[in-house]
Image (cartoon, rainbow, N blue to C red; front, side, top):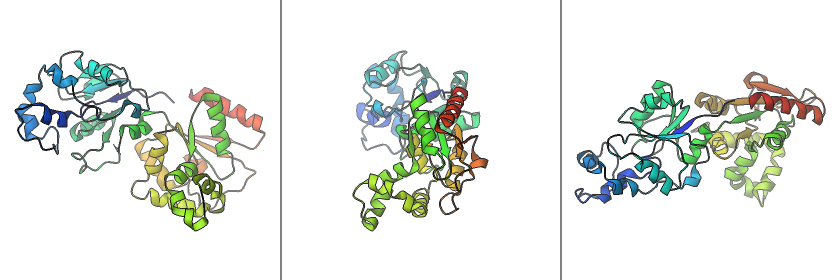
Length: 331
């Protein structure tokens, strides 16, 4: 499980280029908010004004707070070649507290540059870049914006933070109830520092508590979570409903904050995540001494879907030895 080389676009992802452009130049008389970026005729007509205009490029306001970047950035790639003096983009990133990393300027095609730099994954807001890069074999996510919303793709992300679900190495731990999933996750956290959330904790916090609190009289999300063992089938159905439009919705939410997702239960959800390549490793935990769940609360075939299955049928010490051996392999 290798660390991914992650690159980011700048304009439209980190920098609010289009609104800044419309308001910066007096030559642009129509100051209404741009609907598109590079197809906006005001930008097309007056873009030449930006050439070597250092004040313009340095005064672009950021679109996000740098704290939203929850992954290591290996580089930036932006279509600014021929317009931005060397070093200005680096200065803008530094002044706005974005992660320090090399900047590569392109003049239209980013594919060759990113290929030469060994990029594994990229984030862009332009549909033409998204299509070209994915065809070239560089996995690219599309940052949601009003001007690209009509383009349909499951590689769309709603924020730079959500992109972290794709950018960071990620692990899924699956298994039947009480077979030791959480125990394995806790050992991986203690031994190697992997953070994790189980599906139940995340779901309770995000939506299940609000859905069930009046029905069962819960006072807190934790109280709701503790009672989940008595309502597993109901929880399963609620998570399926939450993921109905996008089977990866809960997984992306968890992986944008944690290294590991523990306890996925729906095959539809897993198929969606596998289709996007969300997980670098799927670990199954199985205890032959314990009973299996019925299809009402777990539809995943643990043995079939796991890359590695940890047999948890001995002592805790022996289980920890197996987890240590696994960590040595993947790290």
